[in-house]
Length: 375
Image (cartoon, rainbow, N blue to C red; front, side, top):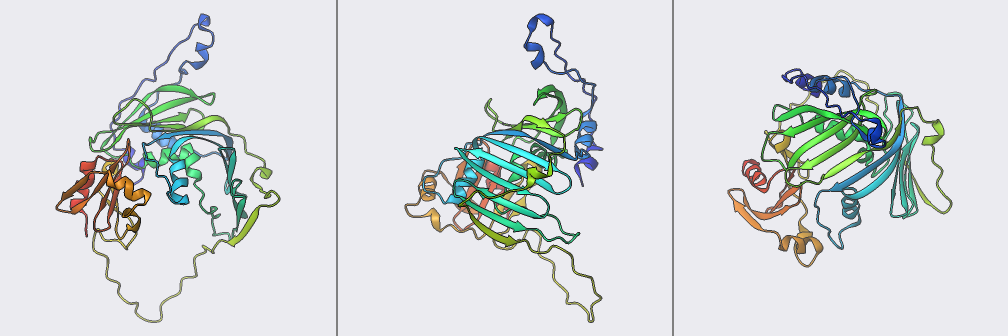
């Protein structure tokens, strides 16, 4: 059931948008005052967000993440790259043109990483490594443009970030329009989501929604404890004019190593009537999953992901992960024994039998999920 459908069940009272009036003598303060916008209910605002559509946009996105993730010296390059995306401050230039053109350029430590597609080809470029991957997109009409390898453009897209949280809305969430604000010079409503459950580490999620296009401009995630945001990603400048086609083309600089790849066809084969009775396939038992495939336990904000058959070879000996786990508390229960890692937002339980439980929940909730999980 989609967010828009679920929202119809909510009995959300009409919220009067708070207006902070300025006076001429205050000068610059007036520019920062909350804009005076017509009243709107949370249900109405959610519906507009779900149906928001623009032909193009471009701008600068700034993100600031403090999830409390530990620094692991000597960790593999892939793990270090992921940690970078989930911590510290980052700046990206983004552009989009309907239906299949997009570009994200991330600037970090005097290096640039670019992911771009013009609908015919896609590029992933790393200026520090001086490497680029070119992906040729099939021209079949049924195909959708492929994304460059290792691209994480959604991390710099306030709309994508907002929709992930909006998808988690259910009766366990209090939803309200908490006021208005200016974001990137544009008037916006503040949609605030507060989990009712005390088992999640998420305190609240506030989404700033543009009052003209209904596109999310900023997302702020507050932890259950503490006064500083765990994550904030939003536009510092934005334009809803359609960018020029040249914005999405890419020419690798001289000396860059280029790897050419071709995206597999996603066109559906023609359906044919079977010449014989197809074999019956027994359905999987509830809660089962293939090795390495996550199983979700719980619902909404209390969801916990479990991965079985995780490679735990690096968790023993003198490796960086082993040193981190050595300091972690040991817990046990009907599910077995393991180590618990906690941060401001993320909790993880690594069991001795190779299962990993992770979620935006308390350690006790992880153990309760482990007790319910299939072995």
